[in-house]
Image (cartoon, rainbow, N blue to C red):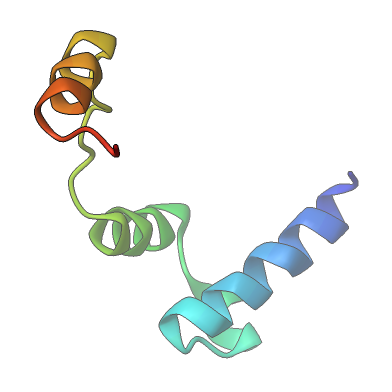
Length: 63
């Protein structure tokens, strides 16, 4: 993917997600965009382990 294509896609996502105009996107710093993405994503949670899934399947069988 070319830089221009990736940047256009990211500008579109910023517009949809944060209400940014193309001008706002191009004036923003990478740090500003990253801060918004981190805030929107929330805290990462680790996926359940195989052991936990097995225990939950035993406790709550689907029948």
